[in-house]
Length: 309
View: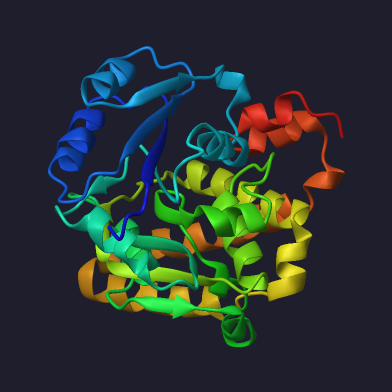
């Protein structure tokens, strides 16, 4: 595409049976990146074997060295010749043969620093899981710039590490992926790019199947981690502001959706909302907590294991 050197990077760990589906969907793509890389942090199954059979280069790292930001930055450093770097997760299944092509062609606009695709609910997803994807990944594409910060706040930097593509020159300008984050490296980079004058593209025509059926406990831990991220990267909220009204808009949309699809799920959804809010607030206050408690509340225990605070 326009002579671009495009690379694909996938961090992996015991991808399991879904990995074969992932590779099958990748093999069906109309566009094939020039470089294919997995960064594996200690798989004990056939993840590495299958990746090698499909032409991927494999870089192994110790499991304790994995970090959402640092590991992705390693990919950019290994693939020095790539102009565009696609990052995916091992559980995001490409939904149609043109998915990669639609994502990459967005960079024909020289102002785009990062583009991310649409995530559809996985087959069999329950209504709560489905609504979250339909709300956050609508059917209409969008191009956002720093001028949208005033109206969208934090939402202007929405991005996805499960299916996104970055322009190397934009990444290098903002210093690359962060070295150490609990999660949210995608939002971190998008925010930096917006502030540097680049644009963020949401490409609804590029689609993957990707959603999670979190238990209440898992949901709590995830939102605790989001709170930790926002507390430690305070500059993002300070520069972009909060996504005013977004939480209420999500709740109203969810209640409407569940009334139509699964009214018996409404009590569970309301409880989930309360838990998410409480977990987020606790995460924002993590600096006051002992390490042992933080390791109990987080999804990412390794993040706190070697930390002294």
